[in-house]
Image (cartoon, rainbow, N blue to C red; front, side):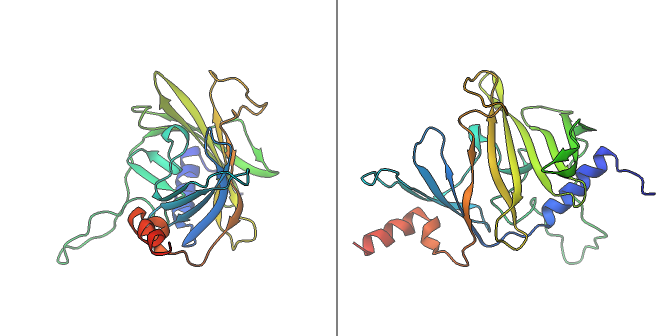
Length: 248
């Protein structure tokens, strides 16, 4: 009979699975920007995290706002993805995992290269055991060091394949903190692409919370597409300007 893993083993395995996942070159979806009425079309170039955004006015006479080559973050500057700390971060916007170790001289023999993050968190199991009808591990993370730098507080990990269903951050905001929860899942009609699906913003100081604890600033991602190619000028403000001028 297999021995159940301890919390730290679940976290380590989840990290391995996260870094092993392969993203397509581009991810496109529709979402909303906080305090804006119109939804926004977003195209991500996953090789470097550059993004192209364009508003989708609901009023036929509404103005379209375009932002080429932007860098996206979550609400209140929360990291988009899995970030052990603010300097060890692997986002859903990049195909690359944590920065690789420095290159070794050719004449230097190397036995192995590892990433060491020390014991940044005290990890324990939380109360949740089921999510979307699946068995999960609920990890509660208590930072051992500066909580404003080590922001993860909870993770829901699938017990069968160690995919991340949820990551919860506690992000500094003024004198207090705001809780941001990211929900992940499979992209519809894709070949096993796992991506961000919903952003829940929770703050005890804010009113109009839903029964699930998410404020009106929360948003979903929908209308996913995985384009095979996107022009480079979508992701560079100067190139975009030159393209627009050449078509006028």
